[in-house]
Amino acid sequence: MTVILYGGVTMSVGKIEDIILESLTGDAQKNALSFITYLSACDMQFEKDGGYWSDKLYWCITYKGESVCYILIFSQASSVDSTDPWVVWTDDSGSKCFADYPLDDITKNIAWKNIDFCGNVNGDCGGCAGRIRKIIFGKEFDNVCGTTFRFSNPNTDAVDCAKKLIEIRKKDIEKSITQNAFSEMDDKLKIKMFSVTLDCSNSQELAYFYASLLNWEKGFNEDGCTWVTGPEKYPFILFQQTDDYEPPVWPQEANKQQQMVHIDFAVNNLEEAIQHAKNCGATLAPEQFSDSWIVMIDPAGHPFCLCPKKTIFDTNIK
Image (cartoon, rainbow, N blue to C red; front, side, top):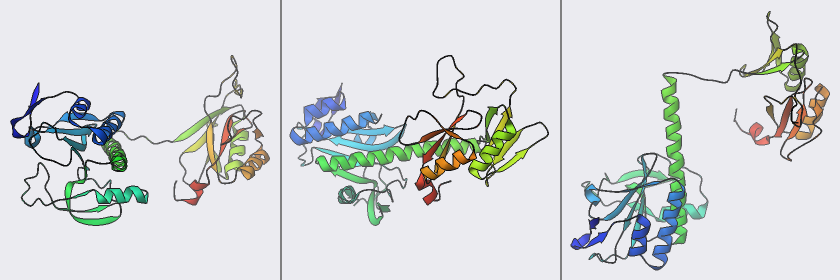
């Protein structure tokens, strides 16, 4: 199979890596291969573009069906005299993923230097509508091309910057897919965590323990169910009294009762939280497996973890 290049010169079409090896040399070849390898590792799809670009070595790179970037390679056999053996354009497809994403200053400055300012007035530059005002990493720019960035024969630093932009665009696509899934879900099934249920031999005793531990309210109904709930009501912890209850063995042992669930609690002061849990009736697990959290045992034998997460209490995260 062949593709028609500039000036009627033809060249075999293979994988893009083969085209790079055949068309580029030196640093250009090395950097292009590095970029292609990164795209492949990110599960990108390579599509030989048609239409306006059908007679050129031009690929549209997509992720989950969405455009991410474009690559143009100039063959040494081409009659076109170009000082840029290969070019990369990003594609944000109109999203604002590059508007205020936090970048280090070095990467940000490289990105700004490679903004593609558009001289297109009549919309005759491929599929680009041309001349857009955009906020790019906190700064506003006029006359920006629809693709936002253009890297012409990028060096190693510029390739690394382009890789970061690909990472940002990939996250943007994944976020959009997730949001669309939840949007569809809003019109159909709705699922929200309601409660965590713990089996025990004495539901009143265990409810009292967790109400004391968390400073939550304790409740019960006529069916014998007991629970504790916090200020936001949901989710709550429900305690189910079982006559033949066997507490789990921790650490786990073969042929012994296994834990079926455990709860992680974020704390802002680990030492104080451990002492508080002990005062409420918990015991320190005899064996610990990490320096990042502490395993405690509640009065019914359930293990639970105290996890130092001070940042949760220092922000508005709920």
